[in-house]
Length: 294
Image (cartoon, rainbow, N blue to C red; front, side):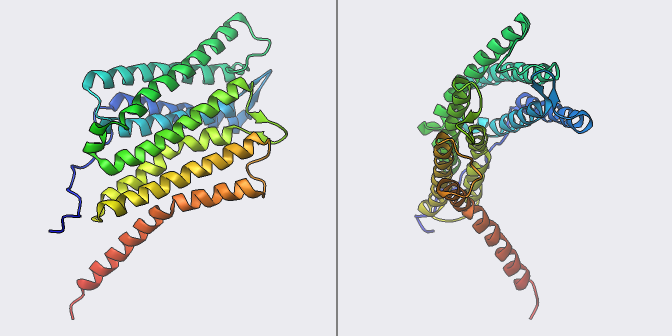
């Protein structure tokens, strides 16, 4: 057998032992569905400063983030106690975040930037800010685990993909802090930090997915890792272009250099996915052709 072919690794134990983190993520979808029904019936804005549509997007985004985190947690090589500590801490922080975002917007209060609110509203907003910081700090702890040798030795390709995703997530968290210090998501005349904040988190689905596809293919190690590096680097460059466009105070969707550069980078990032899916279809056709009798 060719020595350049990587030694096979056991199937990734996605979601293993993370039932409650999964349930917490699904709760976000339930709350988002409730908010969506309200918006369809009564509209998003709630006087004086609430907006249920923001609660919808927040709950859905946090739900996706928690489900993605639950998927990769078993790959972190953390011990049972460390995983339990992170799991239950994050679940409690998520519950508070769901509650503050949903209840306050239904009450007509912006939970992040309270204006003319009651002492209760101010307290909820202050705690929400502290909870957001804890969400960042706890996730930094998890991110570090994937840069250790132990996690890499379990599933090398997935570890590389998750590393890129973690860097992107840190950029998203930085964008969230930018929103807080900026006292809002608007920068300049048309810049909107929420683009950088949101798209960065989706690296947690995109790059590990490419890594999972490469792990299933019988290519030599350098080729497999190369696809992951292509996706990860392109995704990060796309985020950098969006961030710089936002810093300039200009809209992400305008036709100019940095938005076009960002779009090209994200297209490049998804090339490996298209390649592997096409390869799978070709393999099926060849298999079906070989089954036809002469």
